[in-house]
Image (cartoon, helix red, strand yellow):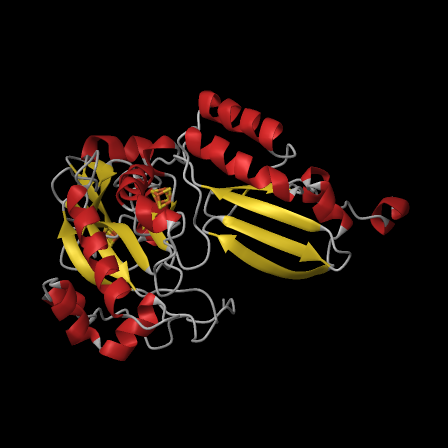
Amino acid sequence: MAEEKAKPRMPIESGCPDGFQYMHPTMLKNYGNWDYHEHLRPGVLKHVAKSGDELYTVKVGTQRQLGPYEINLLCDIIDQYADGHVRFTLRGTMEIPVADADRVDALVEAVTDAGYPIGGTANSVTFISHTQGWLHCDIPGTDASGVVKSLMDELYHEFTHEEMPNRVHITTSCCQINCGGQGDIAINVQHTKPPKINHDLVSNVCERPTVVARCPVAAIRPAMVNGRPSLEVDEKKCICCGACFPPCPPMQINDPEHSKIAIWVGGKNSNARSKPMFHKLVAAGIPNNAPRWPEAAEVVKKILACYKEDAKDWERMGDWIERIGWPRFFEMTELPFTRFHIDNWRGARHTLNASAHIRF
Ligand code: SF4
Ligand code: SF4
């Protein structure tokens, strides 16, 4: 017993596997010893190590949801024209490393012939990131991956060319409360009506205290309806966030008409040149119009066109707006300025966490 106490059970590590086993041999050999890199053309980088070794990287955009056909096709190209190694970036682009400069052109040609764009480096619209959408998650109000695929088709030129003042990160999020992220442009779902409660199901499906505790504005109360335990929502307080739906699906908030899309701009995570910024709402009530979301794409393209035209070199979207001011932004983009743009929510505080520090 005493011996058992002296040796505490070790934690089980269950993170991602060790990446070194999959690395390109040139990367492994020169790990931590890279000297400089050059940007040869959109989507192609050259890294030079202190040892003199060179490694070329070709960045490939995909349709994001890859099936066995696409994976086999791309893997065959990588085996034949590169060195059999590939990695996926945080935003889901494929980066194919190849050590021999003479093989880069043939690789680019093979990938392009297969219908995949090369780009997403430097001052381009990088690969658009999205949350999981209808494919994997149980609470989305829209299909984030579908919005992204439609937008990527529209912004193909901006991915393969580097004509923006700085990098543009676009994100989409299919609910308002969980994944998501700050983006130069963010496309987020926006519920506009409080949840409708199916009282017949609540007592069988939901843990009522859990649901009550979930609401950020204390709008949910336990209630007896038709003699059965259920819940009620104070609709004056409800901010239509959707947080009650995951623990209690009978509180249906998705609605084909009233769940809309909102567009936010100017967010960034990096500390480069200016501090990290929260994105701000600029367009609300855009139809959640599957399968191509043309109205959302129009707004995004309009904002991008103004930014491309007017921002100075190296200004990120938020820096540009700070310089020209919000009135000028709305004037240029011709987006209507409405009462929804004024943040007077009583729960908003000046102390919102805007730094990288975690506070409890
Ligand atoms: S953003 Fe919300 S709905 Fe979309 S995948 Fe994340 S948790 Fe699910
Ligand atoms: S939608 Fe959000 S604010 Fe409204 S009742 Fe549900 S958890 Fe509360």
